[in-house]
Amino acid sequence: MDTVFGFVGKDFALVATDCGVAYSIMRFSDTEDKIMAVDDNKLFAMGGEIGDRLNFGEYIQKNIHLYTFRTGIKLNVREAANYTRSELAYAIRNGPYQVNLLIGGFDEEGPSLYWLDYLGTLQKLTRGAHGYGAYFVSGLLDNWFKPDLTLDEGIELVKKCINEVQTRFLMSQKNFVVKIVTKDGIRVI
Amino acid sequence: MSYDKAITVFSPNGQLLQVEYAMEAVNKGYCCVAVRGKDCIALGIEKATVSKLQDSRTLQKVLLIDENTCIAFAGLNADARILANMARVEAQSYRLSYEDAPTVDYIARYISSCQQKFTQKGGARPFGLSNFICGFDQLSRPRLFQTEPSGFCTEWKANAIGRNSKQVREFLEKNFAPDLNREDTLRLVTRALLESVEANTKNVDIAIISTEDRRVQFLGESDLQKAIDYVISLKK
Image (tube, rainbow over all chains, first blue to last red):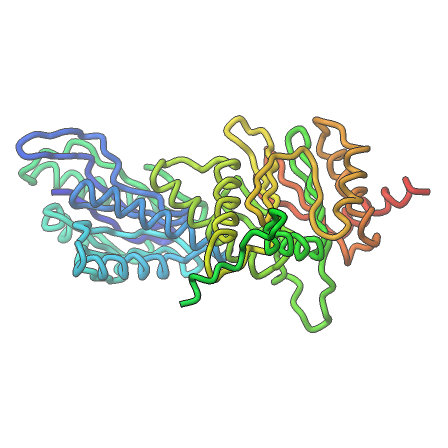
């Protein structure tokens, strides 16, 4: 089960996922990047069924690009999140995508984080997590989060969360990918 | 249903009259010139006269299809929006399937095949426009394609469509040189366009797409005036 978590800082949005790909009793890979840059200021951190994750992510990415070419306007994070939710909500009754995601982005409204799940739920949050890892990480996020986190404080928090999951979660999650979005774009930590 | 009444049928002497009439619509449209340089493509566009109350920014004659491709057209403005939209959807669909940008000639052939479909469709008329499809291929070479209402797609080094295009094309044939640099390409386009259009910054728009900066750049007011003045000085 994929661990996805993220939070919002003073001038950045941060998302992190584990890198493991599991199949039945085997681990296929531990270098999988589950965070997709949908636009130059939006990150989709996705967890769930592998095929659905890739398919859905690319589908949303191309549709958002199409919107940009058609209208000449870039979607902001709120609009992109709502669009993604509408696709998930349609799909749940018509052939569900088993994808849970966190959308982290930075636009005129500042940094933001949206929590979406495969049923078509959408919630704007300051901190959130998906997967089994969420049970471990939610408490840490609640405890150590404060408004206007600096990047260094944010990275400390991420390290705490990763440490906890690696220590206490049943499945071995060796590697994590952490990405942030700031007003200058996307960066890998 | 009107689908059994095909509008585009052959005439006794083997012509598709609707397609020919569509070409007439194109030849009444505002002039558009394109020249392929060594590492850039320059477009010269005759601007429609904008009434005082109109917002001139909404009149777009160069439409971006994908990151490395754009189209300029002559003919029916409204048809262009539809065709550009089809091309944009196709470009993203190609990217979704192949995780790579479609080449300029792929898009050109797609647009021309769209135009061709409507010459064989019941109850519909052909698109009344000719397009210039400009962009860069994988080796970053500039490519210029032209499509017509018939669905014919060809690659060009330089061409003109719309009003007085024949005149402008003859000028280009006499004055074209391959592998021009950015400055010379801009000059050639301005000279060619001003063969057909009155020399006035209000009537003319020059745009350039170069290898370094893949975006379509329109010449600003002062650069435009300089280009026009240069052409006028040549004529004296």
